[in-house]
Amino acid sequence: MDLPAPMVEGTLVRREKRFLAHVRLDDGREVIAHCPNPGRMTSCGSPGDRVWLSPARNPRRKLAWTWEVALPGGVAVLVNTQHANRLVREAVEAGRIPELAGYASVRAEVRAGGSRFDLLLEDPARPPCWVEVKSVTLRLAPGVGAFPDAVTARGRRHVEELAERARAGDRAVLFWCVGRGDVEVVRPADEVDPAWGAALRAAVADGVEVLAWRARVDRERAVLDRPLPVRLDPPASGP
Image (cartoon, rainbow, N blue to C red; front, side, top):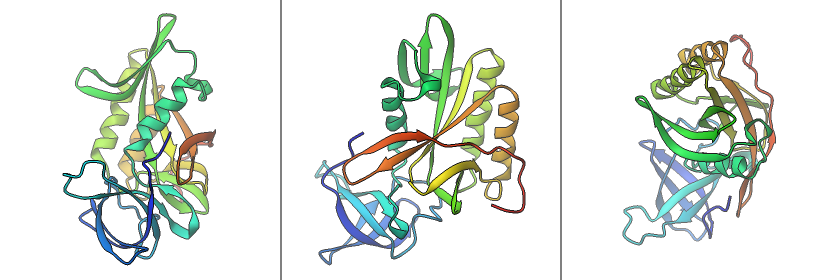
Protein backbone atom coordinates (compact mmCIF):
# COMPACT_ATOMS: atom_id res chain seq x y z
CA MET A 1 0.00 0.00 0.00
CA ASP A 2 1.41 3.36 -1.02
CA LEU A 3 1.50 5.97 1.73
CA PRO A 4 0.63 9.60 1.02
CA ALA A 5 3.51 11.51 -0.53
CA PRO A 6 5.54 13.52 -0.01
CA MET A 7 6.19 12.85 3.67
CA VAL A 8 7.45 15.80 5.72
CA GLU A 9 9.54 15.26 8.85
CA GLY A 10 9.21 16.98 12.19
CA THR A 11 9.20 16.56 15.96
CA LEU A 12 6.09 16.09 18.08
CA VAL A 13 5.57 18.98 20.49
CA ARG A 14 2.37 17.74 22.09
CA ARG A 15 -0.92 16.02 21.37
CA GLU A 16 -4.14 17.88 22.11
CA LYS A 17 -7.69 16.54 22.46
CA ARG A 18 -6.70 13.21 20.86
CA PHE A 19 -7.14 14.38 17.26
CA LEU A 20 -4.73 17.34 17.17
CA ALA A 21 -0.94 17.11 17.11
CA HIS A 22 1.38 20.09 17.43
CA VAL A 23 4.50 19.40 15.39
CA ARG A 24 7.65 21.43 14.79
CA LEU A 25 8.75 20.82 11.22
CA ASP A 26 12.42 20.60 10.38
CA ASP A 27 12.24 24.00 8.67
CA GLY A 28 11.27 25.58 12.01
CA ARG A 29 7.54 26.03 11.47
CA GLU A 30 5.15 24.76 14.13
CA VAL A 31 1.99 23.29 12.62
CA ILE A 32 -1.13 21.51 13.85
CA ALA A 33 -1.78 18.16 12.21
CA HIS A 34 -4.83 15.91 12.27
CA CYS A 35 -4.16 12.80 14.38
CA PRO A 36 -6.25 9.95 12.92
CA ASN A 37 -5.84 7.75 15.98
CA PRO A 38 -8.41 7.75 18.81
CA GLY A 39 -6.24 5.81 21.26
CA ARG A 40 -3.90 6.99 23.98
CA MET A 41 -0.79 6.30 21.87
CA THR A 42 1.20 5.73 25.05
CA SER A 43 4.11 4.02 23.30
CA CYS A 44 4.21 6.06 20.08
CA GLY A 45 3.13 9.63 20.83
CA SER A 46 5.51 11.19 23.33
CA PRO A 47 6.73 14.79 22.99
CA GLY A 48 10.10 14.76 21.27
CA ASP A 49 9.32 11.76 19.06
CA ARG A 50 10.17 12.16 15.41
CA VAL A 51 7.10 12.06 13.13
CA TRP A 52 6.18 11.99 9.46
CA LEU A 53 3.30 14.12 8.23
CA SER A 54 1.50 14.16 4.90
CA PRO A 55 0.13 17.39 3.37
CA ALA A 56 -3.61 17.57 2.79
CA ARG A 57 -4.61 17.21 -0.85
CA ASN A 58 -7.69 19.37 -0.36
CA PRO A 59 -6.55 23.00 0.05
CA ARG A 60 -9.84 23.82 1.78
CA ARG A 61 -9.36 21.32 4.57
CA LYS A 62 -9.19 22.94 8.00
CA LEU A 63 -5.93 21.20 8.95
CA ALA A 64 -3.25 21.17 6.27
CA TRP A 65 -1.37 18.15 7.67
CA THR A 66 -2.06 14.56 8.72
CA TRP A 67 0.10 12.60 11.15
CA GLU A 68 0.97 9.33 9.42
CA VAL A 69 3.97 7.77 11.19
CA ALA A 70 5.74 8.13 14.54
CA LEU A 71 9.32 7.03 15.10
CA PRO A 72 9.80 6.34 18.83
CA GLY A 73 13.35 5.15 19.27
CA GLY A 74 13.74 5.20 15.49
CA VAL A 75 11.08 2.49 14.91
CA ALA A 76 8.48 3.41 12.29
CA VAL A 77 4.95 3.09 13.74
CA LEU A 78 1.93 3.53 11.48
CA VAL A 79 -0.21 5.71 13.75
CA ASN A 80 -2.83 6.52 11.10
CA THR A 81 -5.30 3.75 11.94
CA GLN A 82 -7.35 4.56 8.84
CA HIS A 83 -4.78 2.65 6.78
CA ALA A 84 -5.29 -0.69 8.56
CA ASN A 85 -8.40 -1.82 6.66
CA ARG A 86 -6.84 -0.99 3.32
CA LEU A 87 -3.62 -2.80 4.25
CA VAL A 88 -5.49 -5.96 5.20
CA ARG A 89 -7.82 -5.88 2.21
CA GLU A 90 -4.87 -5.45 -0.15
CA ALA A 91 -3.09 -8.44 1.40
CA VAL A 92 -6.22 -10.62 1.30
CA GLU A 93 -6.95 -9.79 -2.33
CA ALA A 94 -3.33 -10.55 -3.24
CA GLY A 95 -3.59 -13.96 -1.55
CA ARG A 96 -0.83 -13.18 0.97
CA ILE A 97 -2.86 -14.26 4.03
CA PRO A 98 -3.11 -18.07 3.74
CA GLU A 99 -5.92 -18.36 6.29
CA LEU A 100 -8.06 -15.93 4.28
CA ALA A 101 -7.13 -17.07 0.76
CA GLY A 102 -9.33 -18.69 -1.86
CA TYR A 103 -12.51 -16.67 -1.54
CA ALA A 104 -14.24 -15.53 -4.72
CA SER A 105 -14.97 -11.98 -3.54
CA VAL A 106 -14.00 -9.46 -0.89
CA ARG A 107 -16.33 -6.66 0.16
CA ALA A 108 -15.75 -3.84 2.64
CA GLU A 109 -18.04 -2.24 5.22
CA VAL A 110 -20.81 -4.84 4.98
CA ARG A 111 -23.80 -4.73 7.31
CA ALA A 112 -25.31 -7.78 8.98
CA GLY A 113 -28.23 -7.23 11.32
CA GLY A 114 -27.35 -4.12 13.30
CA SER A 115 -23.62 -4.48 12.72
CA ARG A 116 -21.12 -3.38 10.10
CA PHE A 117 -18.01 -5.45 9.50
CA ASP A 118 -14.75 -4.29 7.95
CA LEU A 119 -14.53 -7.13 5.40
CA LEU A 120 -16.77 -9.92 4.15
CA LEU A 121 -15.16 -12.77 2.21
CA GLU A 122 -17.57 -14.88 0.16
CA ASP A 123 -17.37 -18.02 -1.94
CA PRO A 124 -20.13 -20.40 -3.11
CA ALA A 125 -18.25 -23.40 -1.73
CA ARG A 126 -17.88 -22.25 1.89
CA PRO A 127 -19.56 -20.18 4.62
CA PRO A 128 -19.07 -16.41 4.55
CA CYS A 129 -16.11 -15.07 6.49
CA TRP A 130 -16.56 -11.87 8.50
CA VAL A 131 -13.37 -9.98 9.34
CA GLU A 132 -12.95 -7.17 11.86
CA VAL A 133 -9.62 -5.31 11.61
CA LYS A 134 -7.92 -3.68 14.60
CA SER A 135 -4.80 -1.52 14.37
CA VAL A 136 -2.10 -2.36 16.94
CA THR A 137 0.32 0.44 17.87
CA LEU A 138 0.79 -0.29 21.59
CA ARG A 139 4.00 -1.93 22.80
CA LEU A 140 3.85 -3.01 26.44
CA ALA A 141 7.32 -4.59 26.72
CA PRO A 142 10.19 -5.44 24.37
CA GLY A 143 8.66 -7.45 21.54
CA VAL A 144 5.15 -7.48 23.04
CA GLY A 145 2.34 -5.66 21.24
CA ALA A 146 -1.19 -5.38 22.60
CA PHE A 147 -4.69 -4.10 21.90
CA PRO A 148 -6.44 -1.89 22.90
CA ASP A 149 -4.46 1.10 24.17
CA ALA A 150 -7.59 2.68 25.70
CA VAL A 151 -10.88 1.40 27.09
CA THR A 152 -13.15 0.66 24.13
CA ALA A 153 -16.81 -0.23 24.58
CA ARG A 154 -17.15 -0.05 20.79
CA GLY A 155 -14.32 -2.55 20.34
CA ARG A 156 -15.94 -4.91 22.82
CA ARG A 157 -19.17 -4.73 20.86
CA HIS A 158 -17.29 -5.61 17.68
CA VAL A 159 -15.89 -8.75 19.34
CA GLU A 160 -19.34 -9.75 20.59
CA GLU A 161 -20.77 -9.26 17.09
CA LEU A 162 -18.08 -11.54 15.66
CA ALA A 163 -19.06 -14.17 18.22
CA GLU A 164 -22.67 -13.91 17.03
CA ARG A 165 -21.56 -14.65 13.47
CA ALA A 166 -19.50 -17.63 14.62
CA ARG A 167 -22.40 -19.07 16.61
CA ALA A 168 -24.57 -18.72 13.50
CA GLY A 169 -22.18 -21.02 11.59
CA ASP A 170 -20.15 -18.42 9.67
CA ARG A 171 -16.41 -17.84 9.94
CA ALA A 172 -15.51 -14.85 12.09
CA VAL A 173 -12.01 -13.41 12.31
CA LEU A 174 -10.44 -10.69 14.43
CA PHE A 175 -7.40 -9.44 12.50
CA TRP A 176 -4.69 -7.51 14.34
CA CYS A 177 -2.81 -5.27 11.92
CA VAL A 178 0.44 -4.52 13.76
CA GLY A 179 1.84 -1.26 12.47
CA ARG A 180 5.27 -1.34 14.10
CA GLY A 181 8.38 -3.37 13.44
CA ASP A 182 9.51 -4.00 17.04
CA VAL A 183 6.68 -6.40 17.94
CA GLU A 184 7.09 -10.19 17.87
CA VAL A 185 3.93 -11.36 19.68
CA VAL A 186 0.49 -9.84 20.29
CA ARG A 187 -1.94 -10.22 23.18
CA PRO A 188 -5.00 -8.51 24.68
CA ALA A 189 -4.10 -5.47 26.80
CA ASP A 190 -5.95 -6.66 29.90
CA GLU A 191 -4.27 -4.04 32.08
CA VAL A 192 -5.82 -1.36 29.84
CA ASP A 193 -9.30 -2.84 29.26
CA PRO A 194 -9.94 -6.13 31.10
CA ALA A 195 -13.53 -6.27 29.82
CA TRP A 196 -12.28 -6.30 26.23
CA GLY A 197 -9.83 -9.09 26.97
CA ALA A 198 -12.56 -11.14 28.62
CA ALA A 199 -14.90 -10.55 25.67
CA LEU A 200 -12.22 -11.69 23.23
CA ARG A 201 -11.54 -14.92 25.11
CA ALA A 202 -15.27 -15.64 25.28
CA ALA A 203 -15.55 -15.00 21.55
CA VAL A 204 -12.67 -17.39 20.81
CA ALA A 205 -14.47 -20.04 22.85
CA ASP A 206 -17.46 -19.47 20.52
CA GLY A 207 -15.32 -20.05 17.43
CA VAL A 208 -13.88 -16.63 16.58
CA GLU A 209 -10.39 -16.85 15.03
CA VAL A 210 -7.63 -14.36 15.85
CA LEU A 211 -4.87 -13.50 13.38
CA ALA A 212 -2.01 -11.02 13.70
CA TRP A 213 0.27 -9.76 10.94
CA ARG A 214 3.04 -7.18 11.14
CA ALA A 215 3.44 -4.35 8.67
CA ARG A 216 6.74 -3.17 7.26
CA VAL A 217 6.60 0.64 7.12
CA ASP A 218 8.88 3.04 5.29
CA ARG A 219 8.51 6.54 3.84
CA GLU A 220 6.72 5.31 0.74
CA ARG A 221 4.86 2.09 1.55
CA ALA A 222 3.32 -0.09 4.22
CA VAL A 223 3.03 -3.82 3.55
CA LEU A 224 1.86 -6.72 5.70
CA ASP A 225 4.90 -8.95 5.48
CA ARG A 226 4.66 -11.69 8.12
CA PRO A 227 2.35 -13.31 10.68
CA LEU A 228 2.90 -12.98 14.42
CA PRO A 229 1.96 -15.40 17.19
CA VAL A 230 -1.07 -14.50 19.29
CA ARG A 231 -1.07 -15.02 23.04
CA LEU A 232 -4.50 -15.39 24.63
CA ASP A 233 -3.49 -16.70 28.06
CA PRO A 234 -5.48 -15.30 31.00
CA PRO A 235 -4.02 -12.06 32.36
CA ALA A 236 -0.96 -12.35 34.54
CA SER A 237 1.12 -9.90 36.51
CA GLY A 238 3.94 -9.65 33.96
CA PRO A 239 4.03 -8.32 30.35
